[in-house]
Image (tube, rainbow, N blue to C red):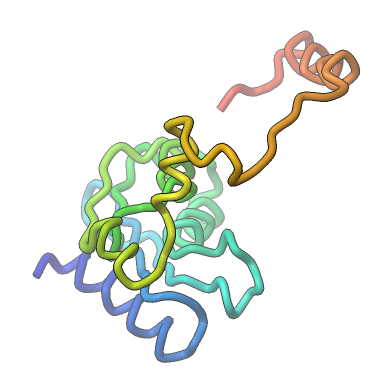
Length: 153
């Protein structure tokens, strides 16, 4: 087994043993192979539906490195990232992700990533209601940020 995937898998095991969340673990390493951060699912511990292993590891890595840009890092995760975690990795500029279990494996034990993928494909429209309101006022903040040359990340 790949040594980093083994660590990600151990993080998952520790998380479920401590009843912190689902069976998911992650580790972020730099290009030289140094471990930057670890994460396990902490949804139950933190009462936070966004506290997936990858998110925890990304937050820890960013805090440790003092940056939002993890472009020189690699993410190892015990399961294929859900849409939220995949998006977070993309926003963090992580270019390489290795995963163990598949999203189908996660679905087979009850984790429902597929409904989000279906929603993004234009299916499952009743999953959430999205309605655009008050754009005229909200766009003013965007314009201010743009005019002041706010950092784009």
